[in-house]
Image (cartoon, rainbow, N blue to C red):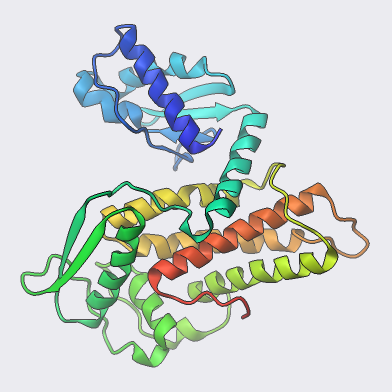
Length: 325
């Protein structure tokens, strides 16, 4: 069950509660379903009860209690728990969890670097009024692409009072080179002062930009090496949780970055994807006398999907994703 399918399942639960007179609300067009956050549990979580609390005239946890049995009766759902103010945490059967992981990887490979694109902002025109300042220019340039990925259009104008005013760079970032300079300006939140230092150029694990670009290059190297071994990706077996979760969250990250005018969210999420991929990559290909297996083919597909997301995300930030590094 993919997050999209699970979102429809949540909406069906709301519709059943409305039909049975337990809730008096308009069934929303969309239910947000994501991997659980801090304090959550299970395979996925939704904030639908918090979303419906005000129109229902009930506390969020009471709405969650009404929806829980409707969700629990869904095939493939093992258990539904309520945490925090009213989050519904959904546990899937192992087969469904594996199927969800498979669906995420297949979706990434099918959609390529357009994975995460949506129509969440279809028809929206975002006016970006910025000062004449290098960081503001770079942030606005990234936002034009990120907003477009969500179906909207961003128009950049210069003037005062500026609606988008990132904390300026303390010095000219140009000596870092185009890619490192953009990363230095985009990776911090707009209200944080960027560091314009040579740390952005060093090729070691302490440099987030290096880890992201190195992880992308490793994903491409793994595919080349696998081809030499006659090993092809397969997407029909379970995958490690951390990287699948990071890939599943990427579309939500793009939407949040567009709606909150925060390209730093994309940059930080790419670091999460890269770190999960780098942890996985030693196990992707057979080693020594080890025979190729279904697990290797599955990890190879996951590595390919991760590399695709890294390339797409870097492209939205205006940063090159080299195949060799």
